[in-house]
Length: 564
Image (tube, rainbow, N blue to C red; front, top):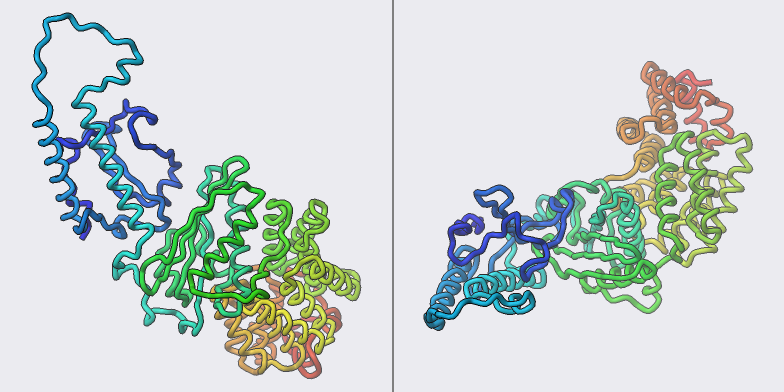
C-alpha cells in the first residue's frame, strides 16, 4: 500500500501548521537542511506536501541512501501505514480536546494592556501558538522515531526489494559475496568526486585480500556510478548477496561518511553507520568501516589477516592522480600511455615514498614495450622491473606489484618466474580479478592456454563488467586453443570498450588471418596501422612473448593480413 495517499489535506487539518514562505529556517523547533537539486534527488524523501499557495511546503526527509517512499513503513504503537497515521491523528485530536478543557475562560480585564519588553514577549507565548509548537514537536518526534526504526531495525521487506537467486546472472558463490557501490559525493563541490572514488577503491582493495570473501572488482561496480539503481538489481546483475552503499560529505578539514550493508536476498540492511572524523583520520576511518563490513557478514579474521591495509598516501590528491593514471594506462594506446607517464611522474614528485607512483611508472614502461612506443625495448622492460620492485618494497600489501612484476618477467620469456610471481599475487589477493587475469596471461605466453582458460573465467566472474584488456587476452587464449569465433567475439568487445586499442586490432587481424578470412584480416590490419603507423612485423616478432609454435602461428596470421 502506498501509505502517503492516506494522508489528510494538511492545510485544512486543524492539527497541522503549514510552513509558508515567510517562515525562517531557524524558526521553530526542527532543523532544516539545505539541499542541492542533486542531493535532493539522491536523499530519499519520506513525503513532500505542496499546499495551494505558492512556496507553501511541508517536507520530511530521511538520509537513507537509495530508499524510496515505497520502502517506508509508518509505525505508530502496534499499527502500520494508513492505520498508524489515522491513530496518530486521532491521538492528537484527543490531546487537543483535553487541553481545551483544561484551559479556563480568560476574564476580560478592564485595565489597559501594557506592552511587554521584547525579552518578556519571547517568554510569554499565547496558548494557541504554544499548542501548535507542541504539536509540531510531536510530529517531528514521531517521524524521527519512524526514521530510527527504519534505519536500525530489520523491518519486513517489500518483496519488490528482494533479490532473486533465480534471476542471478551468475551462480551465487559458496562464500559471503559483496559488491561495493561507488560512494556518493554529497558535497556541493564536484571536485570531491576523487574523495568518494578513492574511499570506494580502498574498501574494495582491502576486502579483496580476505580469502573468506568473494568481492566484485572495482571496474564492475563503478559502471553504476552516478546511476539510480536498486540494490536487488545490482545483486542480480553481479551475482552477489551483499551490497555496500554509502556517501561522503566533506566540509573544511572534516569528513562525514555514511554507509550501510544490505542483504539483498532478505531485502533489509544488516547495519548502517555514520562516521564523523577529521580528514587526517580518513584512512583509520576506512579501517573501521572495513572491519564493520566483515563483522556484518559474521567473518572473524586471524591476527595475521587483520593487517589488511596498504601504506596510505599522505595526500588524497596523489591517490586520485594514481587512479586516473591507472585508467589511462589501461586504454592500450600510445597517447593515453603518455598521459599515464606524466601522471606517474607527478605522483612521485608529490610523494617520493608513495608506492602507487612507482607502480604506475612500471606499468607505463611495460606498455611502452607492448605498444612499440619505445626505442629500446629491453631497457623498457628492465625499467618496468625496477619500478615495480620499488613499489613492492614500499607497501605491506605487495599483491598488485607482484602481479605486474610477474607479467613483465613472462613478457621477457622467463615463464617460470612470471608464473611463480603470479601465483604469489593471487595468494595475497585471493579476490583479485586482475591477479587471476595476469596469471592466465603468463600461462598463455608459456604455451599453456588450456590452464589459462579457468583463470580467465574466474577473473571474469570476479569482474563481470571488466576493462578491455580482459577481453583482449581472453581472446588470445581462445585463439591459441583454436576457438576462433569466440576469440573474434572477445577482440570485438575489447574494441567496443576502447576503440583505439591497437593490440585488439592486432589480435583480430591475426585470428582472421589464421582462419583464412583475408579480407576481414586486412580490414583489421588497416585499423591497426591507423592507430600505430609505425607497426612492423619485425618488431612484433622481436617482442612477441609467446613460446615456440604459438609465436610462429601469430606471425603467420599477421602476414596473411598483409602486415609486413
